[in-house]
Structure formats: C-alpha cells, structure tokens
Length: 465
Ligand code: F0G
Image (cartoon, rainbow, N blue to C red; front, side):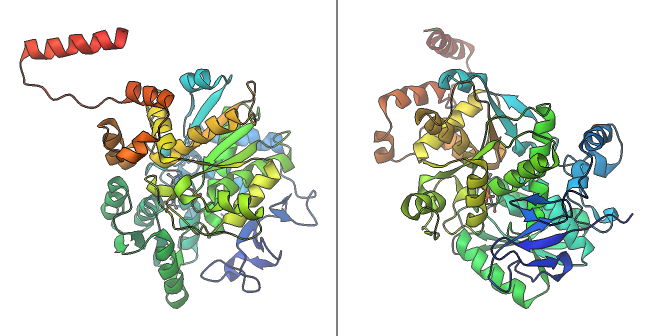
C-alpha cells in the first residue's frame, strides 16, 4: 500500500530536501544543521509549510481510527507507535514496517511522591516497558523501517547502551546486520548483554560516548552504513508518538508539565514536536511545558543556559553513574533548546545523591526505573522547591528505562556501596533518613528456623517502630 510522504527541513537554515536526498550524517550540507521531518499539514515551530491548513487531517476521525486499531490483530495496529502512523507518513510502503509491538506503555500514578511533594498528581509514563526495556524502541521501529525501505544491509549507532540494544533487536527482526559502538566499561551490563543477544557486532571503544560518535560519523561517510543515532530525524518521528499515546490515556486532558531526562538531548524535542503537532491539528487545546533534567556531571545544556543563555554549546567531560546520560557534547542541544522555549519548560541539573534517592523512591512505589530515568523525579523536586510547579498542576515524568537495565547500580545502592565517603557526607540529614528507610540490603543468615524467625521479628519491629 502506498502512503503519503514527507520532506526534511533543516532546523537551522530552513532548507528543505526530499527524505531520500539526505546525506549519510543527517546534516544540512549548507549549514550543518539537523533536520526535522515535515508533512504537508505541518505548521508549527517544527515546520512551516505555506499550504498548511488545506491538508489538515480530521482529528475526530483520527481519534476514532486510533481507538479502532487497538482491537485489530494487525501488527502495525497493535504497535503503540504505528497505530499513530497517520501523523508520521515516513514510509512509501507499510510492508517495510519492522515492529516488536512497541509502545502501549503504562501510565502509573505515583501517590507517595505526590504526597511527599505536596502535589495533586504525579504520574509516570513508563517507557522502560517497551520490548527492549527503553524508550528507544519507539524511535528505532520508525528509523529501522526506513533503513529497510531504502535497501541498507548494515545499520550502526554509537550508544550509552539503550539505543544499541534497541537497534540490535530491530535490525535482527528485519534481517539487517548491525554494528554497535559503545564506550568501554561505561555501560550497564544489562544493555551490553542485549546487543550481543540480538546478534549485533559489538565494538567497545576505549573512549566515551562522544568519542564513539566521532568514529561512527567518520565511518558512515565512507561506507554504506545507515546511521541510527538520534541525529536521524526518523527516530524522533517514532519518539514523538508517546506524546499521542499519553494524551489518549489522559482522555485528551493536557497535563501542565512533562519532565524528561536529557542526554544526547533528542527525546525532549521529539515529545515537544508531538505535542506541538497535536496542538496545531486541534487534538489538544495547549501544549504542556516540557522540562529537561541533566545529571550534574553531564550538564552541558544546563551550563549553556546558565552561562550564555543558549548561544553556544559548552561541552563538558561527562561523568555520572547514570551512564545512559553520560554525554558531554550532545548532538541535539539546539533542538532541546527549541523544545524548552516553545513549550515554556526548564532545564535543571541534579546530583548523584539526588538521583539515587529519587530512583529508590520510584522503586519503593513498585515501579522501578534505571538511574537516568530517576533524574525526572529529582528534577521535579527542585522545580517544586523553586516555586515553578504548583500544587494543582499535573506532572508526568517520562521514565525512559527499565530497572533491570542496571541492576548493579541498584544492588550497590542498597548495600550502601554506591557512594564514596565524601559523597555520603554531602547528603543532608533529612535525606540521610530517607536513604536509611529506603535501603533494603539482603540479609545473609544460616538456614535455621529459629535464627530466621528472630531476625524477621526484629525487622518487623523496625517496620512498625
Ligand atoms: N534515558 C535513558 C534511559 C537513555 O538511554 C537516554 C539516552 C536518555 C534518557 C536521554 O535521551 O539522549 O534523547 O536526551 N540514551 C542514548 C543511548 C544516548 O545511546 O542509549 P536523549
């Protein structure tokens, strides 16, 4: 089946090209800017097609269609990404769709966090519930399908671990070969094991994520390898669909705030694009504020905003235990800046101790997430303390990765082995109490009923004390 198509528009100079005309590094040859995918109906900060209006899709029909597809047995209808394909017609032939039935992720209430922060509603959109355990699946299904349609045999990415896991899985489903570049020793084992399991050629480079990007960018200009980092704008078309799914889950009632972690800085802008397009089409009456939270040790956007109001990126030598966002020179920083400015959101930074506490709190709600995702709750605390978020405003945290991605971090935390003595000393007395209550290290005992009973009795007394 043939479907309508799209163009790519440079986010810097506005030049437009056909999707098939893009170069191997997805950058404008004139000004080096990144591209957005635009459609005949686009008329948002993400594309200013003059004839927009005439081609606007009918929103009532779309809502009905998206609901209908939920009961279909077709793979593209069951996918929580391709269900919304009407708003990202990037393929010429839908037979090229590569799907693992991604999306369809739950929206959870966080009652304990809401109570602790004095807010009426905090919810978590758990993108870690995707097939490979992270939000990357929503983008990978889109871009990998494009790679297949364009006849590529090899695909590649540089990654802090989740993109590589997603790419390897989708490439395997499509029968394509994949190459993964990851920083040696700086990714979580769960993620490393996934790319091997899904059959990728896994290359650990003795550098950081930013070094991996440099090598890969050079490679794709010399060999016919399809680049699947988030500079590839088709990734972001898939990553915008959780915005549609979220609003459907909320019965089209727009929350005031969406909070996302920031690493290479593509995801916040993908969601903002989704919200902006929905607003333009009349699916929602306004856009939520999208805020981006970085780890203190990997905070180039935060620093850039503080030091030069977003004029020129200040790259940093990144270091954080939230390895997913251990990125010092983010490719999509200008897109992220646009997302903050068009939606009215903020950028904050949070410390290693704040991340660990927030992660334990999310775990204690029975939800769990990987460290990078927990920056959202840690950042929310700061925004509330600064008076930027009020009691009645509804907040949705985007949890980007599953807790099992980085179980080493979780075990180290509960055993009290995550922080150095200096780092522990920096924790406030109030937070120390919270850490103590949340830490649940395993208890090692002899297999003797009386001993076990005595220990359980003393633990139960502690709980009721
Ligand atoms: N959360 C998780 C769990 C991630 O894996 C990433 C990025 C982010 C947040 C940040 O998203 O880059 O769009 O700002 N991970 C990439 C990777 C870089 O290679 O897996 P971003």
